[in-house]
Image (cartoon, rainbow, N blue to C red; front, side, top):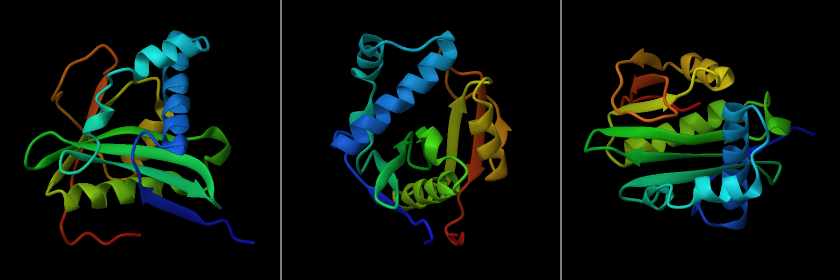
Length: 167
């Protein structure tokens, strides 16, 4: 049997989206602190994190499922009329290496184009080497910093062409 990915626009507060967002924060915080994040730290990190903006017309949130199991998520946030920021891109460890990350990026880029974006930007940390490899494989190139924050080490950008073919 062939595994099948599905990607759907979904509110950030559905049970699957919420669980994926918790797993995302747990992983990135734990890697940053070099220890597991506590439930209270995860709650604090998710509180008022701006995810409410990841709905049209200011953004979009996508949940990916592999054979029906919630496996990935990601969002876009419109920064201005032409730039969208890629955010909260996450694939659960058990589902990595199955092609879902590239499909997720394609869906998010398509959503950004649908909201009028001509360019996608993102920021990440140097220690998130797998994410950085995904972005560069997907055509993202290092750009000057467009924002500042304590968890930002490197910035990437990619032109979104209206006629880009989807995989």
